[in-house]
Image (cartoon, rainbow, N blue to C red; front, top):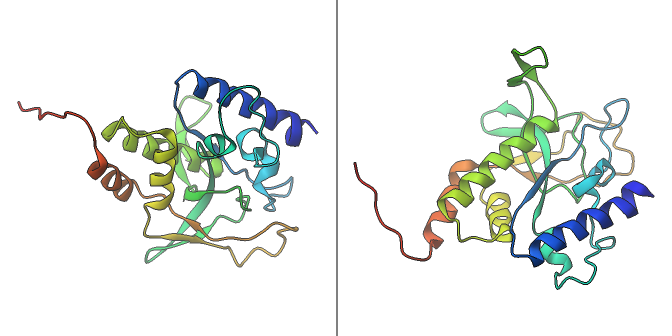
Length: 203
């Protein structure tokens, strides 16, 4: 109940409050790394933003639509590079229609809790990649809305993270292919739609 009703209501109400006050943003969350045995499950069970759906959004008395909420949430799956431009969803990565796109998540060089560095895998490695790409897009065009940034990040791609056919136990989750995030294409998509007075810096 808390994860699927109360949690999404609180999250969407908080987002509605911020939007009504003129703040704009994007919430990026990892899809999750499966169940206790690392078998993929539906990402909607990962809680917080990933559990927000059309049916459980609560905006209170704010003049905010359900689309305003959903258009500012990006749920990220993990993908592994198979070589030759082919990406496959990681064996542990949660699935389902709540997932928006995929990003590299296998053996990512990252910080370790002993103050050093190590290689880590998981959707928690993938989500920061998408956060960085969204930040790049917004930095080159600050006049974009959060919804526009999400659309650019999720649609500017030339690669697909295909269903991992080696996984036999997906429970009843819906299996889908996801677009792979692409920083270059996303930034290039944002640049031509610049508005306002822009100058050139030299020196």
